[in-house]
Amino acid sequence: MFKISKLFRGEIKKIFLGPGMFIMAGLFILVLALIPTIFNPSEKSSSLSQIELTTNSVTSTYSSFLDYKNIYENELETTHSDIATLINYNGNFSQNLIDLGNELYNIRISFAEATNREVINGTNGCFSLHKSLIDKVSEIENLYSAYMNNYFIPLILVDDDLDFKITTELTLLSRLLDGSSSDKTINYYRELNLTLDEYGSVSTIRELLSQTITLNYSNSSLNEQINNLYNSKNEYLENILSNITSLVNLAGTSEEVNASKINRNQIENDSYHYLSTLINLNTALKNSTLLEIAENYSDDYLSKYIGFENFNSYMYQEQLIRTNYYLENNLLDKEISNTLAFNISSSESTNAFDYMYFSLEVVSVLIVAFTVIIGAGMIAKEHSDGTIKLLAIRPYKRSKIIFAKILATIFIGFIFVLIATIISTIAGCIIYGISFPSVLIIFNATHALTLPIWAVFLIYLLSTMIKITIYALLAITISTIFKSYIAAVCVSAGLYIVNIIITFISNGASWLKYNVFSNLDLFKYFGGSFLANSSSNSITNLFFSPVFADTSIWVSIIVIFSVGILLNIITFTVFNKRDIT
Image 1 (cartoon, rainbow, N blue to C red):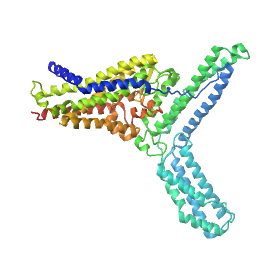
Image 2: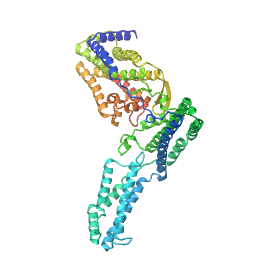
Image 3: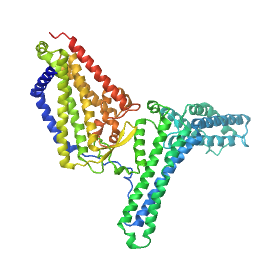
Image 4: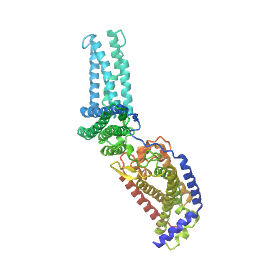
């Protein structure tokens, strides 16, 4: 242990005396100095942000509350009705379209027979059947449009290509069947029959409708969701409404009571809780329904179809856990802080911790880059400078030499994180002030809990240090493989830069989940990733670490642990076996 300590101190000394340290220190100070000018956090989003109650008096507050109450109750009832439709149809949406397609085809056959028999009038005459064709096409168009657009989720699975073909053929057939002509002789119907034969739209539509996919889901589960969510807050809502009504009745016609600040504040507070419950119930119903419908499919499979292009079950599950926490505890979302997210305030007012998080995220790019360059030169530079032989003849085992270099590289990264934390804390306290609110954490989209904001920041620091450790190990591994210092630095830095570019331009493309670097940020599993993605600030894309579909924190931990072991095995094996004498 003493020998490792001595080697470690020697490596640290070499790093601090190297010219790279002075360059890094200068850039580090410059970036930290610029951060206050670029930090412009968005306000914390709130479900009540669109609500502005009139608070001039008790009666005006109550009147504006009723207006919003009607709006959100109607929205909730619409969602409830949509879910009831899902249950009542029992997943037969595609079959309904297929049945209509068959009916259209049968009418088409009857129409052809009527033209051949030259029958114009009557139930089975050309005139009646022509009108039936027009009506059936319109019925198919309306039902298809309803299934795709009239609900908060498409009721059938259709990709872009199939949707284009169906809508195109229906439009074409509608034009072919245009009955505006006044000349409805048998010749007109014969020509129409020949035109229908030529284009074959009826048969094509019938075939296309058979390609739509019926969603597979459990009606009993959807019923249970309605019972657990839709009916769960009835008593709570009734109590709030009763309290509001009693305060309004108390006001009567007395101007003195009507202007009572206490009554106005109480009604306002109760109104917000009532409306918040309606909004959260609506969100919870939608998200739980989406998750129930998606349970039998992978996210990648669903993403091929219209309405599910960016479907991410993790995101909806995280939102559902958050919303349920508010519902179960009768909380407004503004009454508790969000977790730390890039360039977004965790509370209604910006905290020093928000600034600290933003600063660390920005400078961590520089810290990781410097750590990668230092690590890439640990062994390769010894080869390039010819000092590797001097290192080899020293009375130290090679495993201890490489271990000391790994520790020194990681230590340098940690030191810069510590310095950045101290500086950003001081700056954040001076600019924004510091407070210690409770923060709602959504861990791995499965558990909701509250932690003090300082504890959340410590979790973030731990996540950052794990990321730096893996990058340092990767750089040292590359350094042991390449004898050329320039080659090692170029490869290491190139991998890091390419990863940043891909992450920036891909905007969280699902295939990135197989990228090792995409699993290094464990903090995204604490509820802040999708909050950050809601920001309109373009700089967010550079630091946005998405949680990919079909992944979890345990997947990322396994990836990190496996990669760490693999890099160590490669590093120690190559360095111990390489002939450096």
